[in-house]
Amino acid sequence: MSTEVVAAETAVNTVVDNSAGLKAIGAALAVSATGFASAWTEKEIGCAAIGAMTENENLFGKGLILTVIPETIVIFGLVVSLLIIS
Amino acid sequence: MELLQKLRRYYPGSRKKGGSRKKGSSNYAYTTTRVRAMKVHLFPKETYPRLMNMDLNEMTRFIQESKYKDAIDEMARNYKGVDLIENALNRNLAVTFTKLIDISEGELNLLISEQLKEYDIWNIKTILRGKYCNASTEEIMEAIVAAGSMHYTEFAELASKDTYQEVISELVESEYYPILEQYTGDNLDDIENQLDKKYYADLFDVIGLAKSKDRKLFANFTRTGIDVKNLMTLFRLKKSGMTDPEYMDLMIDGGSQMTLVDIERMLDLPFEEFIAELENYPCWDEISDVVSSDMESLSIVESRLKKYRLKSAISSSRFYPLSIVPIMDYMLSKKNEVNNLRIIIRGKAANLGDDFIREQLVI
Image 1 (cartoon, chains in turn purple, red):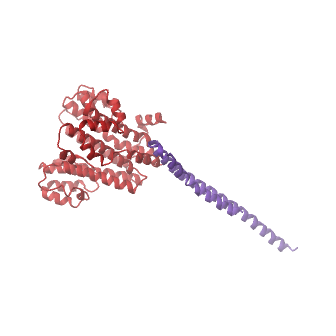
Image 2 (spheres, helix red, strand yellow):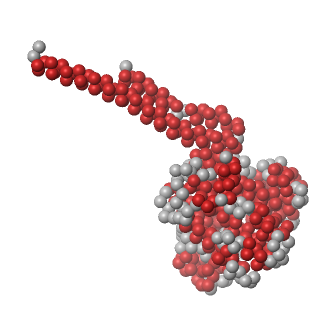
Image 3 (cartoon, one colour):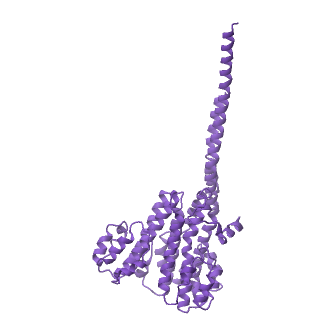
């Protein structure tokens, strides 16, 4: 095997290794960014829900539902990250 | 947590001039939503015509069964009848506004506390007026609304003093002392004006350069309030035929629509021209049908101007739901509710005509 072919194979392997790493970074970003986004929105909605509940306890159910709605963002992020790494 | 909030209320020393407290610690989502939930408990406008059709006992029972129950139970030991209701209304107002200071944080807390200093000034003025006309401690305390930074017991202590000199010497540590020390016993109107001007100057000092959206909104709210106050004073002066430029001292600087120059110009105009000039201002739509050159009473104009301010606060709170405006809107609405109830109850107790009472209401 000539030296050029070996060099080319090494280069291809490096690119393949790099793409796997980039995929992992992409997947991590998808989960972490959506995780932060949903945490931030849940904090705001949760605060508001607690404020409303303090004055009217009957709003507990509505408050709970509204607080967990942003959780869908992180689920989308998780699905996207699974698609990236699969 | 509650203890920390109370300590913060009593020792607000961390505040800096120019309102430089960090914005990041404000809890707008919590406070505005809680305040909106509190606003639901305000009486709807349909309540007032119903109250007007009740006699005094029915009204008392109606208020006793409402959210004012706790305050009435608390005050029932010392007062009865109309006095009980009036004191309970004041007590409820103070508790509600103090609660706003307790539940807010950061910049929001700073702005609400500054706004509520209006009641500190109101109470100091009430005590000085009481001393001026030799009112008893109980009579003075009936008009006290301890919703600002000073506590009810502090005002009770001040009201129990024998002379105004003793009251003022008790306030030597207060920020109002430089003004109060000029009180000689016969210049109360001047002192009251200076206190009001100081209140607005301090508010604008806290707002600072109004870089953030909330401070701009708060500044606009305050400026609209100044416009309404100045316009009411202007109406009273014009109606009494007082056009001397020295009355400009009664006006407060900082209005959004009317500058002091505009007011000075209007002060000189005859009443008909003054009314014509008002057509250029946004409040005209609200007052146009009650203002005329031969009008006798100003009470309806004043209630319409208050309504204009309330309406502008309500519309701003819809545009900016997560800001200070819904809280200011609530404070204004709550104060208005208490005023309306007081007007109806006192009016009924004094056997005033229904039409006259209705004119005074801001619904």
